[in-house]
Length: 328
Image 1 (cartoon, rainbow, N blue to C red):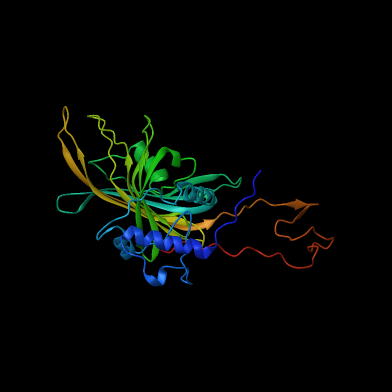
Image 2 (image 1 turned 120 degrees about the vertical axis):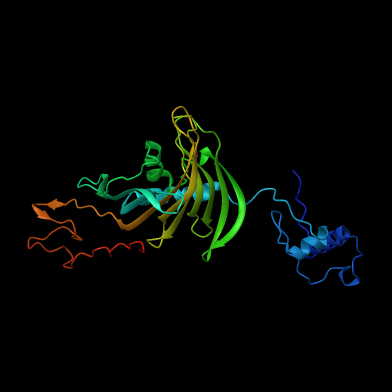
């Protein structure tokens, strides 16, 4: 075994760095920098910080650095999205769907409307109840099972750790949206398996909370078979922070022209559709199950009941504050 050589002094390392920088620039080392001095030059084996001016000084005017690998890891926000998905499963809310066809004069000539309340039954199981559904007046298009599935699952897009492996994520850059600093990613399915629906588009992820705040995308694939065409429009879904922790979907809008090709017995046509989905009245679910101890309801008690029915500590139980609701 050999004795390890002592590490060079910091001042020596800084002097070597200065020499290397000036040599790269092709300039002589200034006399004031020809020896060790108190000038602090911070170095790292992993990264450095350069201003645009410094990049041009080092590599020439107009030079742009090429990204080798971003420090971001997709698992970070996918894990946070998974946490949000579990939280969302414990919230009641209302989903208001409106799909319209627009004629050449810009007027609505057909509409599908459905308001659904997502709640829990007495056993804590999630359920959906239609609270408002006027007559469907759509004539030029009709709702398909894929449309219903898109509304329920993909318009309020959540990219969990279970699903992220199905997509290619391409980092686009950073952007501030309504005072929220975001990472921007393009999302596309790696492989589209037959019979499955995916999302293709762009997402904005809050840099601080690591959750999706905007999704601008399209559900794919479309069914292009003649006589069986099933097309979907591109859409944008916005989220808001409802409970101070998670970003919940609050609004989805699509406005596009769908191109249906002609076939035997029918003509090709272009149909402009407008789709709006509002998600409101988010409330955290609280179980209504009662806890019975020796014949007494102790659901909200802080301790076991005493013979007089009071909690063990003699204090009233503390109820949780009411859950916040999404702004209207």
